[in-house]
Length: 190
Image 1 (cartoon, helix red, strand yellow):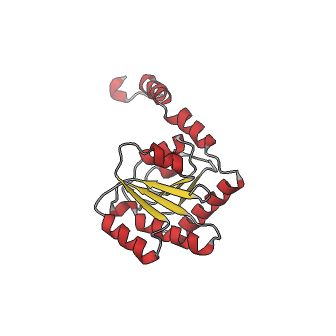
Image 2 (cartoon, one colour):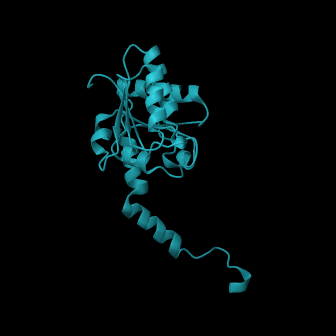
Image 3 (cartoon, helix red, strand yellow):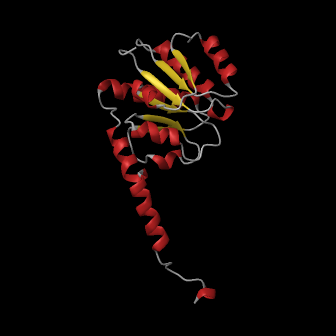
């Protein structure tokens, strides 16, 4: 619905992505808020049955929408107000989070892998400790409140992604690293 906030999660439906935690968080938000929150889950995988079961257990079938696998996530990112990534293991540097930020979405993500390095010091990205369910709920609530107040626009994340992660920027950074002379040469090379 256009007048209700939408959270999107993009990724394979695998145990380490912890979609069931996000579903529980959305259920809690819907229990405590006057406005309904919807969740789009984009992806497919081995955890699909567990996720469908959790949706049934929480009674959130009208608010949680499973999209399945797709070659183009952009329409779903455009339909959303907020991106969430709730991984509990394995993440290194999330392409899905980068894509969402590049589309201007504020981000909530667990502190796994390089999450804390991706968007440092940005109000539009909240990183919570991966095993802290209340922190996940609070981060989602906080970002949704910022969005509803008009403060949660993701332009600064989009600009940060362009400045730090565009091909031109990364190419320039790699050239700097590759062509830099070491400050101290190992004794065997002197």
